[in-house]
Length: 406
Image 1: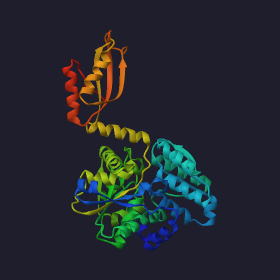
Image 2: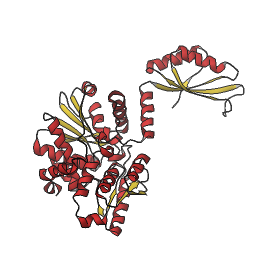
Image 3: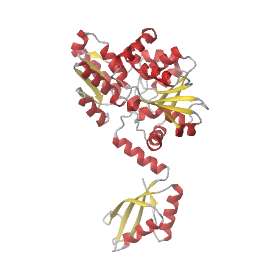
Image 4: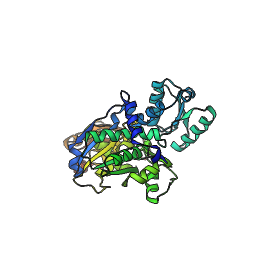
C-alpha cells in the first residue's frame, strides 16, 4: 500500500533533492478572492514553478531516486503535458534518455516545451489513457524505467513537498483545496498535512467531465469513467491510481466537482483581477471556492494553483466568452442599403451609443441578401448587458434591425 511506502522521511528527502531545482513558489494572500468568498484566501502559485507546474517536484524526485543501471536504460512516461515537461527536464538534468507519449490532442505549447527539454515525443490518439497504454507497450520493448504521472510513491513524495512549504508559510491554515486527476498531488499533500497538522481540512477538486477520483471516493472503490470530457487536460484522467486512491480515501476529508464554465470563469477572474495565468486544472480549486461548492466561511484557506501551461488559443476563447457573458463584448448583425455613406451612418450611431468598435465585416454578396443591400457584422466592446441593450435600442431607433449572434 502507498500509505505504507510513503513516509515523512521520504518527503523530507524529496525536499532536499529539490533544492536548487524546484522553486519555493509564493503563497499570495488575495484580498479580491477573500472578499468574493468570505474567507481568508491564500494562493499557492505552482503556476510559477519551473516547467510551469508542480509536476517537476515528483518527476525530479523519481528520476533522482534511480540507480545507475536504471538510468542507463533511460525513462519513459505518458502525459497530457505537465508531467511530460517535468520528466523531460529531470532527465535532461540527469543526462539520461527520455521518451514521452502524449495524447494527439495535447496543447501544442506543451508538446513543443517537452521537446525543448530534449525528450523524444510520441503522439498517441485519444486522451491520457491511450497515451499511457502505448507508453507501457513501448516500455516493455525498451526496458526503460516508467515514470508514472501519479501512481508512484516517489512521485507522490515529491508533490507532497508543497505541503511542507505551505505549513511553514501559513502555519494557521485551516483548509486546503487541491486539484485532482490521477491523485498524485492530492494524495501527497493530504498525507503530509494530516501527518503534521491533522486538523487541516483537505478538499479534493475535480472537473465534472472527468470525475473518476471523486466517484471512487464516494463509492469506496476504484471507479473508471468512460470519457474525460473537459478542457482541463491536466486532470482529464479516466482511471485513478490504486496507490493514490488508498491515500486519498484515508486522508482526504471531502471532494468538490466543478464544470468547465465554472473553471473558465475562475481562469478569467485570476487573469483580470490578480494578473495570474493558470490552466484549467490549476483553476479548479478556486472555481470550487468562488462558486460555493464547499461550505467554507471565515476560514483561512489555501488554494493550490497547480499549473499555468494553458494553450493561448484556449485562453483567447475563455476571454472572449467571458467578456460576452458579462456584457462587455457583443457581436451584432444588421442589414443596410449598399450605397456610399451607409456604413458611416451605422458606425456613427454606434459611436453615439458609446460602444467601441473592435471589428467590422461588410458583405454584399452573401446568399439571401437582396441586391443593393449588404449585411454588416460588428464586434463591439461594451460596458455591461444594460449598455448592450442601449446600443440595440439606438440602432433600432435609427431604422436598423440589429440582432445578436455568437
